[in-house]
Image (cartoon, rainbow, N blue to C red; front, side, top):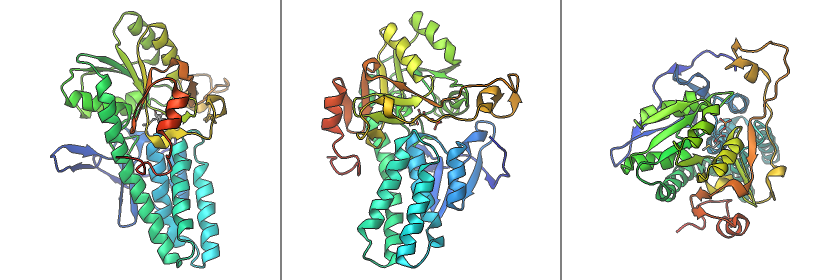
Length: 376
Ligand code: MRU
């Protein structure tokens, strides 16, 4: 996790909606300019950067400057928009530049399917207009990126509305990693449900896992929860077990980076352990994710690619202070697989999915190429 010169510093963008509620955003696109908050420095510094090209976009995703499954998809789509004027004006070469850029960005991180999903939509939008002039194709690509962004906001809202029905007054909810407005274009997935429950005065308390090794829980989720003024406790990952045993947790809500056709879920390392604990202690374990996170081409979790990251993320705190002998080999899988049997329900924008997951996913997530297609 290297340091960079700050482009600009200010608070996380907040805009006021028609209802007067403050909305937070982690990326902003305006007039072909793409800005994002560099999440490596949160909560200590709120540094905004401008992404100028595919290469810096790739680095931003790879280094988790921008992160969270839905957000990296939206961000990658916009990366294409801001770079498109540097592609050839000759049509064949334009398409080959475009495909090369898409292939490159797709490889920034392997686990979250939203990245591939969003870029596939960009590719399809371009191919649909392949007989038109290049200028026209460019417009369609940018319109598609904006549509992906807008839809993501809506998908978060729908997840919150479905998921909140699972929350009872006074619930003590455990969550892992960061699934809020820093991980999506809207209020989030699992955290959006928590925000909605708080808004509806359900008097919830949140327990946020710190989420070793990159501390998305303590750096990002704790920061979001404070901004939203939600009663919360930060805990280390190993505290989940005794809390559950001592009946201090009523429900677990987590996000997902990819959901296979049978309901197996890839999410931040540590999720599987939590699911086993929840199962053992008879605590409902809920996964919240938009339809763009389902990958029906993958039969089960064994086939989901797991990202393995630099050993220094484990041996050092945030890539800086050593907390281990420098030469000790370390394991650093960034994600794990939670088998569907341990999951109580999956909250999607299209409704709440219960077992049998394979059948219910097949029925509900029929077309996730364009999530709005089969929405009421
Ligand atoms: O490595 P990260 O920080 O991108 O991992 C994020 C997660 O694992 C989230 O739980 C997941 O993307 C769901 S985000 C709504």
